[in-house]
Length: 127
Image (cartoon, rainbow, N blue to C red):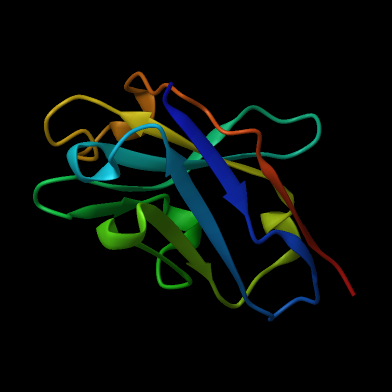
C-alpha cells in the first residue's frame, strides 16, 4: 500500500526556517514525482512545489520562490521541503502527494492529478 507520511512542522517565528519531510512506505519514491501542497484555514488547497522523478527538475509557486527548496533523497525514500524566511502567510497544513505522469512537475503541475496523500503537518508562523 502506497503511503506518505509528512513530518517536521511546528511553530516558528517570522523569518525562521523549517524542513518538512515526506517519507514513503510501501513503494519506492524513485519513480514518482512528489508535490507539496498547503491549505490554510478558510482557503483552498494550493500547490507549493514539485519535484520530478527522472530529471529531478523542480517547480515552485511564485510566493515561495527563492525561499523554499524541494529536494529528494532516494536512498532514504524521502522528499524534503526546506522553508526559509517564513512569513505568517505560510501558515497552513502542508501535504505531500504522488504524481504519476511523466514530467509531472512541468508547467501547470498543480492542476494535474495527485494521489496517495499524506495526513499533513501543521506549520504555524507567528511571533
